[in-house]
Length: 273
Ligand SMILES: NC(=O)c1ccc[n+]([C@@H]2O[C@H](COP(=O)([O-])OP(=O)(O)OC[C@H]3O[C@@H](n4cnc5c(N)ncnc54)[C@H](OP(=O)(O)O)[C@@H]3O)[C@@H](O)[C@H]2O)c1
Image (cartoon, rainbow, N blue to C red):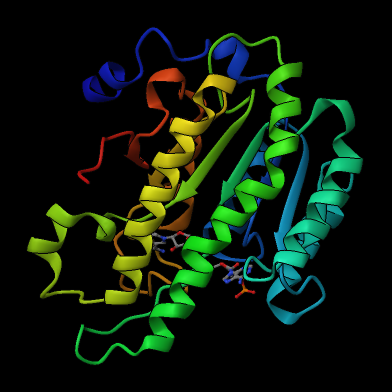
């Protein structure tokens, strides 16, 4: 808790500012961490004005839980088709969202969609590496680029000083396994080369974006959700998805200028590069 307080010091937006309703977009929102984020955000009444829950197959069997949630909160949740490896689909989604948010813009973009391909260096194929880069690196990078005009509108329209997830922000879902330091101690337990390498590249994309966008007061961060019981994390993972998301939302709620370009976990701890 002390560590959390020291990370989130004076330049963080005030709690009142962070309680303001905002327009939010989440990729990969039909299951796992993305779906739980949608669930917890809509349950926190008055927190989100419009929630664009993106998924690649809105009418498919893996989207039923999201469809049910959207039926319960028709004023807030808008399901949007987006496949992050298809640039045309990202552009189309940006058009749809742009028409809905208008002059308010998009306050928070959560780059959550990702794949976790496993394998050590010797067994990993070029295809697995390219697929991982396409989804985990080019996907979030193109999403940032295509939604940037809407984030800019929100940054200009906002009355919040400094930076905040309620003003204009991009949160990218990374992993502890992307850390070079951590890999020395965890590789023998989990080789997952395509996952580690692509998420390490995502970390660099996010740091570059944070540098490029800081003058426009658009916050860009990376988060490690922990080892979470989802399809990616597996049933033996350490924490339940609701614990991870509760933590992520709490940390996001306290982010300010100091956190741009940072890599934090769901408890607010700074992660090693
Ligand atoms: N769970 C963990 O322990 C853990 C640890 C570290 C980092 N993470 C990261 O946290 C994020 C969420 O993970 P999770 O555990 O919730 O995984 P998950 O349950 O496997 O869900 C992954 C989500 O990403 C979506 N997705 C994958 N490729 C996509 C594409 N091309 N376009 C659009 N959506 C796509 C999936 O959609 P479909 O249903 O259509 O496949 C699904 O909604 C990921 O970035 C993951 O790498 C998770």
